[in-house]
Length: 364
Ligand code: FNR
Ligand code: LAC
Image (cartoon, rainbow, N blue to C red):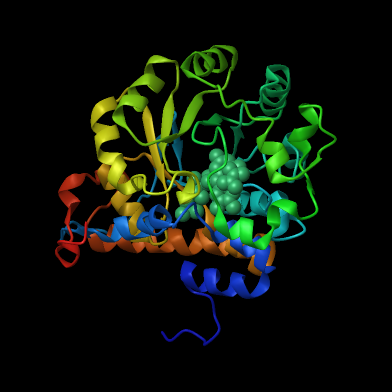
C-alpha cells in the first residue's frame, strides 16, 4: 500500500509537521536539550546501536503486547511521559492528551508543571488511566496537598522526579527568551502559595533542591499510592530507591534536558535491571520513536516505556486526535516488531533477542 503524500505515518512525520505549527519558542522548549544536546541526540542513537536477533517459525498469528506493571496487567507498555505545558501545543492541553490516553489504553502521567489541574483532568477524562508526577516543593504541605488530590481522584501511582533539583542549561530557551515569555497558569503552583501564573524559572524555584532519600522514604510511607522514582541512571541509585520504599524507577535522563553527556536510557538500563532484579519495576524513557525501540527496551528488561516529545508533536498537529494517532502508530509498529521478531508475547522478550549492531561498531 502506498501512503498518501502528506499523510502522517510515522512519529518522525509528526515531529516535522509540529515544527511547522508551533511558535518557534515553544518548539525550541519542547524539542531542545541541555548543553550541546549530546545526550539528547544519543538517546535516539543508542536504540540504533542494538540489533534485533529475530526468531522465525514460532507462530505469531496472535500477538499479545500486555505487560504487568505495579502488579497489574496493562494492555501494552506505553506510558505518556510527564511533560510540562501541554497548552503551549494545543488549547485543550492535557485534557486532549488524556483523551488520547483513554482511547489507546496508555497511561497519562500528569506533570506537576501541567497547565491542567489534578482534579480537573480526572473530572474531564475519568476513563484515562493516570499517574501523577510529583516535583517535591520546599513547602511540603503544598506537596502533600497535591498528593491528596491525586489519591482522591484515582491516580494510580506517584512518579517522583529526582533529576531536576535545578534546571539544566537550555540554550534554545535562553536564546528564544521563552523563560521571559508571558507566564502560563500552572494550577499546581497555587498549592504552593503562588498565584498560579508562573514562569518556568519561578516554578522551578518552588522545587526543593535539597530533596534526599529520606524524603523519598517519607513520601512512600505517607502515600497510599506506589512511588516510582524517575531520573535514575545508576544501579547504585536504583538500589537506594528500593531500600527507601519505591516500587519502581524510571531509567531516564529527562530527555537529555538536564545534564548533558550523561548516559542514554538504553545504555543505562541493563545494569539497573541486573542490580534490582525483581525488587523494582524498571521503566525507561528517552528517544523511543519506533516499535523496534520499544521491543528493545522490553528485551533489556524494562516493564514499560515512557514516550515524551512525540506525544506533544501529535498534540500540536491535531489535538487529541494527533496524540492518539502517535500512540497508535507506535502500537502498530510494536505489533509488527513482535510478529517479525518472533515473540508472540511481549513477556517472551529477553536479551537473546538483541546483539550489538554491527553497523555501529566503533561509534561508541
Ligand atoms: C519533559 N520531561 C519532564 N519530566 C518530568 O518528570 N516532569 C516534567 O514536568 C517534565 N517536563 C518535560 C517537558 C518537556 C517539553 C519534555 C520534552 C520533557 C521529561 C519527560 O518526562 C521524559 O523523561 C523525556 O521527555 C523522555 O524523552 P523523549 O521521549 O522526549 O525523547
Ligand atoms: C522540563 C521540565 C519542566 O524538562 O521538567 O522542562
